[in-house]
Length: 87
Image (cartoon, rainbow, N blue to C red; front, side):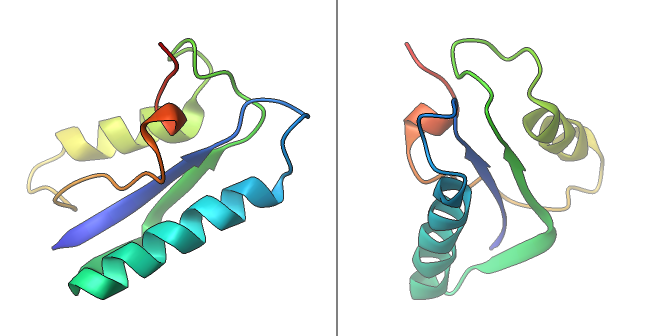
C-alpha cells in the first residue's frame, strides 16, 4: 500500500514540532503494517484552522494529486481525524 501523510496544526498555541510528531506517528503506523510512505506526498499545513477547507494548500494539493490517473497513492494517512477538520 502506498500512502501519503497529511499533518496540520491550527494556531500558535500549538508547537510547530506538532507537525513532526504527527508525521512520525504516521510513519510508525505505516511501518508496522508494511505500507510505503510516498515521500513526495508528505505534506502539512501550519497555523491553519480545521474549521474550514479554505487556505489549506497542502491538503488541496493532495486532493488534486488524488484525482490524477493512475493514482499515485492508495489512501491518506493522518494522525487524528481532527487534523482534517473540526466539527
